[in-house]
Length: 132
Image 1: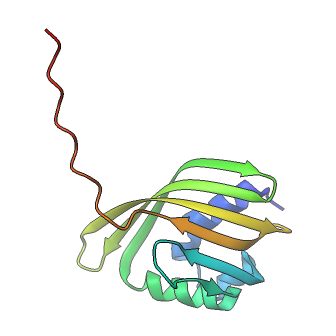
Image 2: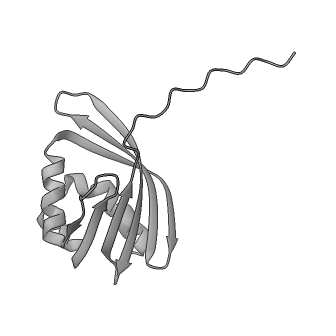
Image 3: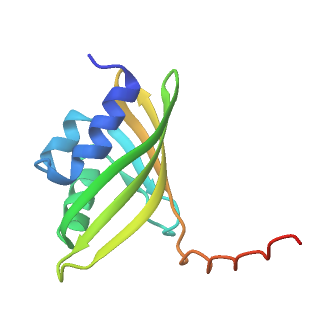
């Protein structure tokens, strides 16, 4: 069995192309929870429901690409910073930085919390004048 960090990296990079909802059972405990934190009331409980929820979400896009930036592991807790690129059905692309916290039990995801900003990033600061 892969260690926890490897299992989570495999999940976050491959879920968009897995055969959901059934594949969720290979990664989640039967009573797992998934919470898309910025979306109020968006907690989903149970591997089948998580798989169904992700399959519905996935159907909104032509493709979803995931780039893992940083992984941190402490026992059964894995944190993954990633960039998710959503290719919409019209071909336009939305890029979103996401941080996920995963709690595992016996190598399976028992809780998954995703954090991302719901507002557009601020306008870049203007260049500072050079010191004279």
